Length: 269
Length: 301
Image (cartoon, rainbow over all chains, first blue to last red; front, side):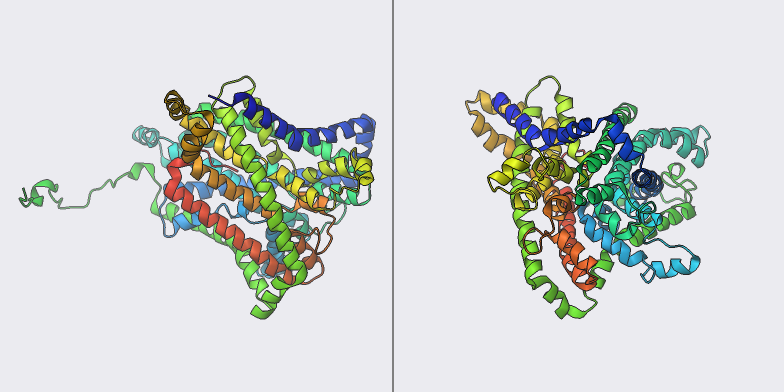
């Protein structure tokens, strides 16, 4: 095939220019702070609690998404109902809807006098401007990851195996937990990790509903912005470096999970 | 030969009773389980995904249709719309050219560390939008590496349009490449080899063989890339400086209006972005239904 040198050369050049060199800048700057410098920033109560909220809320949101994403994927693959095709398209809404729009819409719905918030408030459940709101927004933006990862694997799962299980006397519940679930487990975990990774770094949809109270409902990306506005470049870089390292670790885990998923089901997850 | 067919011979004899085991009864759930699972999924989708969308339009029209259009044609809003269009008109073609070239290099040739290259191209997806903005502040900011040189030559990147374009290009970097790579991998190089053996040159092969093969996948990637480029908030927010009428994109304008408690105007501008999202989803579904077999099998974002 012609054009190998030229196209590969341009690919690497553009990749370095836009992505690799700017990203490396964070690590060069962070290295300049030294380990002690980074530790000093991260161990401050405000940064620590922001990182804890970002990762904790993301883990909870990803768990909710794993449950409901699996339910939605199951219903869409296995059952038939009116308007299925149309609803299937709306699952990608959180991908397509700009995060700021999602953020103000969720806040309008779940604030004390919002459509949904007014029913939750009397029950003593405050969603907007609390960590609960952070989890809610993270769940919203992460849902498609689980559905879209599990759906194709579930579609390609062999029904013969289920028939075999049933003919051998397994109850439906046993078939689901011991035949179907192991098949889709790698895909489900991949979806969980993708949804978690997206939620950790999420900014636009979260800041409106979070209320952003320091030590309580302030997420790590917002703290980076606050530090930048205070011209505390070193502090911002330290937080960013921690987040980058953790997201690269996640990326590695996702790649391993996808490899496992491919060998487990033969399907592309 | 137009002999009428006697259908009674082909139909199986009618049973005097309903068959006990319905088709596939062993591999589905009891009816009440199916109904309640479907209901739970639908309530979740409607309540959780669709309600925010509806809320955007209801809130936007709260003060009437007149106020709605006023909020959109107002000078700062128009400037924001123009800037958003400009930025995506630069960032999307940049990534389009890169996506096609990268996919050509990766899928039509074999070389070492190919998987590593694909992972690196995907990298921007796993970076927080805020960090994506921060990296350019570290380079072009007043305290940044290129900062002093920039101010000496009166060339502004940060808090100006070039910075917004750069940040947008970064966050939308992988969209088109990652749509094309699996598609072109699946298509292989047979068509191109045939064209080459018939005497076509590289350029002709690309324009007449490869491009027609990947056009729907390419359009699909452009759609997703554009939606993200126009809607990007976090990264742009870091580099823009929020100067009204100058460096405010539509999502940033929404934020400013919202923080000024000008809710109906904020939702009016937001409704334009929501319509863009609906248009994207509609076109995307249309492509999947019409040309599903010409799109990459892996459709994840």
